[in-house]
Length: 237
Image (cartoon, rainbow, N blue to C red):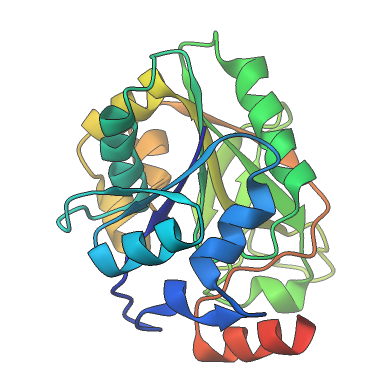
Protein backbone atom coordinates (compact mmCIF):
# COMPACT_ATOMS: atom_id res chain seq x y z
CA UNK A 1 0.00 0.00 0.00
CA UNK A 2 1.14 3.55 -0.72
CA UNK A 3 0.75 5.92 2.23
CA UNK A 4 1.35 9.63 1.73
CA UNK A 5 2.20 11.60 4.90
CA UNK A 6 0.71 15.08 4.64
CA UNK A 7 1.44 17.49 7.49
CA UNK A 8 -0.39 20.78 7.09
CA UNK A 9 2.19 22.88 8.93
CA UNK A 10 5.44 23.55 7.08
CA UNK A 11 8.22 25.88 8.20
CA UNK A 12 9.47 26.81 4.74
CA UNK A 13 6.10 26.72 2.95
CA UNK A 14 2.96 26.76 5.17
CA UNK A 15 0.06 24.57 3.93
CA UNK A 16 2.04 23.60 0.85
CA UNK A 17 0.28 20.20 0.60
CA UNK A 18 -2.90 22.08 -0.34
CA UNK A 19 -1.27 24.38 -2.89
CA UNK A 20 -3.04 24.32 -6.23
CA UNK A 21 -1.25 22.55 -9.07
CA UNK A 22 -3.14 22.27 -12.33
CA UNK A 23 -6.49 22.57 -10.58
CA UNK A 24 -5.77 19.98 -7.88
CA UNK A 25 -4.38 20.29 -4.35
CA UNK A 26 -0.77 19.11 -4.30
CA UNK A 27 -1.49 16.09 -2.07
CA UNK A 28 -4.33 14.96 -4.33
CA UNK A 29 -2.21 15.37 -7.46
CA UNK A 30 0.49 13.24 -5.83
CA UNK A 31 -2.01 10.55 -4.90
CA UNK A 32 -3.45 10.50 -8.41
CA UNK A 33 0.06 10.16 -9.85
CA UNK A 34 0.69 6.85 -8.04
CA UNK A 35 -2.72 5.26 -7.67
CA UNK A 36 -2.10 2.95 -10.64
CA UNK A 37 0.71 1.22 -8.70
CA UNK A 38 -1.16 0.23 -5.53
CA UNK A 39 -3.86 1.29 -3.12
CA UNK A 40 -3.33 4.80 -1.75
CA UNK A 41 -4.12 6.47 1.55
CA UNK A 42 -3.11 9.87 2.91
CA UNK A 43 -1.95 10.09 6.53
CA UNK A 44 -2.56 13.59 7.87
CA UNK A 45 -2.69 15.47 11.14
CA UNK A 46 -5.38 17.89 10.04
CA UNK A 47 -9.07 17.46 9.25
CA UNK A 48 -8.78 20.13 6.56
CA UNK A 49 -6.40 17.92 4.55
CA UNK A 50 -8.54 14.82 5.20
CA UNK A 51 -11.66 16.61 3.96
CA UNK A 52 -9.92 17.77 0.78
CA UNK A 53 -8.65 14.25 0.06
CA UNK A 54 -12.01 12.60 0.62
CA UNK A 55 -13.72 15.22 -1.53
CA UNK A 56 -11.50 14.00 -4.38
CA UNK A 57 -12.05 10.32 -3.65
CA UNK A 58 -8.71 9.76 -1.87
CA UNK A 59 -8.80 7.76 1.37
CA UNK A 60 -7.47 9.74 4.36
CA UNK A 61 -6.44 8.66 7.86
CA UNK A 62 -6.25 11.19 10.69
CA UNK A 63 -3.12 10.77 12.81
CA UNK A 64 -1.56 12.45 15.82
CA UNK A 65 -0.15 15.97 15.33
CA UNK A 66 2.81 15.06 17.54
CA UNK A 67 4.82 12.93 15.10
CA UNK A 68 8.31 14.23 14.38
CA UNK A 69 8.68 12.48 11.02
CA UNK A 70 6.57 11.38 8.09
CA UNK A 71 7.53 7.76 8.65
CA UNK A 72 6.23 7.83 12.21
CA UNK A 73 2.98 9.22 10.79
CA UNK A 74 2.56 6.45 8.22
CA UNK A 75 3.32 3.86 10.91
CA UNK A 76 0.28 5.06 12.85
CA UNK A 77 -1.79 5.07 9.66
CA UNK A 78 -0.68 1.51 8.84
CA UNK A 79 -1.85 0.43 12.29
CA UNK A 80 -5.20 2.14 11.84
CA UNK A 81 -5.57 0.51 8.43
CA UNK A 82 -4.84 -2.93 9.89
CA UNK A 83 -2.05 -3.80 7.44
CA UNK A 84 -0.47 -7.25 7.78
CA UNK A 85 3.19 -7.61 8.84
CA UNK A 86 4.37 -8.73 5.39
CA UNK A 87 2.48 -6.13 3.37
CA UNK A 88 4.69 -3.71 1.45
CA UNK A 89 4.26 -0.09 2.51
CA UNK A 90 5.55 2.69 0.26
CA UNK A 91 6.06 6.17 1.68
CA UNK A 92 5.58 8.79 -1.05
CA UNK A 93 5.99 12.38 0.06
CA UNK A 94 2.99 14.66 -0.49
CA UNK A 95 5.19 17.25 -2.22
CA UNK A 96 6.07 14.96 -5.17
CA UNK A 97 3.14 15.67 -7.55
CA UNK A 98 5.19 14.78 -10.63
CA UNK A 99 6.48 11.42 -9.46
CA UNK A 100 6.27 8.81 -12.22
CA UNK A 101 4.40 5.55 -11.53
CA UNK A 102 7.28 3.43 -12.85
CA UNK A 103 9.59 4.98 -10.26
CA UNK A 104 7.28 3.89 -7.45
CA UNK A 105 6.95 0.47 -9.07
CA UNK A 106 10.75 0.14 -9.05
CA UNK A 107 10.77 0.84 -5.32
CA UNK A 108 8.04 -1.70 -4.70
CA UNK A 109 10.09 -4.36 -6.51
CA UNK A 110 13.20 -3.39 -4.54
CA UNK A 111 11.36 -4.00 -1.26
CA UNK A 112 10.23 -7.37 -2.58
CA UNK A 113 13.83 -8.27 -3.48
CA UNK A 114 15.22 -7.48 -0.02
CA UNK A 115 12.26 -8.30 2.22
CA UNK A 116 13.83 -11.52 3.59
CA UNK A 117 17.07 -9.83 4.66
CA UNK A 118 16.92 -9.21 8.41
CA UNK A 119 19.46 -6.37 8.27
CA UNK A 120 17.78 -4.46 5.40
CA UNK A 121 15.21 -2.23 7.06
CA UNK A 122 14.39 0.20 4.26
CA UNK A 123 14.56 0.42 0.47
CA UNK A 124 14.88 3.73 -1.35
CA UNK A 125 15.94 5.41 -4.62
CA UNK A 126 18.32 7.96 -6.05
CA UNK A 127 18.94 9.77 -9.31
CA UNK A 128 22.10 11.17 -10.87
CA UNK A 129 22.52 14.90 -10.23
CA UNK A 130 25.01 17.53 -11.34
CA UNK A 131 27.67 19.02 -9.05
CA UNK A 132 25.72 22.29 -9.17
CA UNK A 133 22.53 20.56 -7.98
CA UNK A 134 24.48 18.69 -5.30
CA UNK A 135 25.42 22.03 -3.71
CA UNK A 136 21.76 22.68 -2.81
CA UNK A 137 21.11 21.73 0.85
CA UNK A 138 17.43 21.14 0.04
CA UNK A 139 18.52 18.24 -2.18
CA UNK A 140 19.64 15.31 -0.04
CA UNK A 141 22.64 13.37 -1.34
CA UNK A 142 23.52 9.72 -0.77
CA UNK A 143 26.68 7.68 -1.20
CA UNK A 144 26.40 3.93 -1.71
CA UNK A 145 28.68 0.92 -1.47
CA UNK A 146 29.54 -1.41 -4.32
CA UNK A 147 26.53 -3.61 -3.54
CA UNK A 148 24.04 -0.75 -3.76
CA UNK A 149 23.49 -0.12 -0.04
CA UNK A 150 23.54 3.37 1.41
CA UNK A 151 26.65 4.44 3.31
CA UNK A 152 25.44 7.90 4.30
CA UNK A 153 22.95 10.64 3.47
CA UNK A 154 23.64 14.36 3.81
CA UNK A 155 22.43 17.80 2.90
CA UNK A 156 26.08 18.60 2.14
CA UNK A 157 27.64 17.50 -1.16
CA UNK A 158 29.04 14.00 -0.59
CA UNK A 159 31.58 12.73 -1.33
CA UNK A 160 33.83 15.76 -0.88
CA UNK A 161 35.49 16.38 -4.24
CA UNK A 162 39.01 17.23 -3.09
CA UNK A 163 40.70 17.27 -6.49
CA UNK A 164 37.75 18.44 -8.60
CA UNK A 165 36.08 16.76 -11.58
CA UNK A 166 33.80 14.35 -9.71
CA UNK A 167 30.50 13.88 -11.55
CA UNK A 168 28.89 10.94 -9.75
CA UNK A 169 26.64 12.72 -7.26
CA UNK A 170 23.47 10.86 -6.27
CA UNK A 171 20.37 12.80 -5.31
CA UNK A 172 18.13 10.93 -2.89
CA UNK A 173 14.44 10.71 -3.72
CA UNK A 174 12.11 11.10 -0.75
CA UNK A 175 10.47 7.72 -1.21
CA UNK A 176 10.85 4.82 1.20
CA UNK A 177 9.71 1.21 1.04
CA UNK A 178 9.24 -1.19 3.95
CA UNK A 179 7.41 -4.29 4.93
CA UNK A 180 4.82 -3.35 7.54
CA UNK A 181 6.91 -5.22 10.14
CA UNK A 182 10.06 -3.29 9.28
CA UNK A 183 8.18 0.00 9.30
CA UNK A 184 7.15 -0.67 12.89
CA UNK A 185 10.71 -1.74 13.75
CA UNK A 186 12.14 1.46 12.33
CA UNK A 187 9.70 3.60 14.27
CA UNK A 188 10.56 1.79 17.50
CA UNK A 189 14.19 2.93 17.23
CA UNK A 190 15.19 6.04 19.19
CA UNK A 191 16.24 9.07 17.13
CA UNK A 192 19.99 9.36 16.61
CA UNK A 193 22.28 12.41 16.86
CA UNK A 194 22.96 12.20 13.11
CA UNK A 195 19.24 12.23 12.36
CA UNK A 196 18.56 15.26 14.52
CA UNK A 197 21.65 17.12 13.24
CA UNK A 198 20.96 16.67 9.52
CA UNK A 199 17.16 16.49 9.97
CA UNK A 200 17.15 13.28 7.92
CA UNK A 201 15.12 10.46 9.42
CA UNK A 202 16.75 7.74 7.29
CA UNK A 203 19.96 8.25 9.27
CA UNK A 204 18.20 6.67 12.22
CA UNK A 205 18.36 3.28 10.50
CA UNK A 206 22.04 3.58 9.59
CA UNK A 207 22.95 4.80 13.07
CA UNK A 208 21.42 1.67 14.59
CA UNK A 209 23.30 -0.67 12.26
CA UNK A 210 20.58 -1.44 9.73
CA UNK A 211 20.98 -1.36 5.95
CA UNK A 212 19.13 0.72 3.37
CA UNK A 213 18.96 -0.83 -0.12
CA UNK A 214 19.19 1.71 -2.94
CA UNK A 215 18.41 1.67 -6.66
CA UNK A 216 19.02 4.25 -9.36
CA UNK A 217 16.09 5.55 -11.39
CA UNK A 218 15.55 8.07 -14.15
CA UNK A 219 13.04 10.73 -13.16
CA UNK A 220 12.15 14.31 -13.94
CA UNK A 221 10.20 14.67 -10.71
CA UNK A 222 11.24 17.09 -7.99
CA UNK A 223 9.96 17.80 -4.51
CA UNK A 224 8.29 21.13 -3.76
CA UNK A 225 9.93 22.56 -0.64
CA UNK A 226 9.59 26.31 -1.20
CA UNK A 227 7.31 28.81 -2.96
CA UNK A 228 9.99 29.08 -5.66
CA UNK A 229 9.66 25.34 -6.27
CA UNK A 230 5.91 25.83 -6.66
CA UNK A 231 6.46 28.54 -9.27
CA UNK A 232 8.63 26.10 -11.21
CA UNK A 233 5.93 23.44 -10.89
CA UNK A 234 3.22 25.77 -12.16
CA UNK A 235 5.39 26.77 -15.12
CA UNK A 236 5.99 23.09 -15.87
CA UNK A 237 2.36 22.02 -15.52
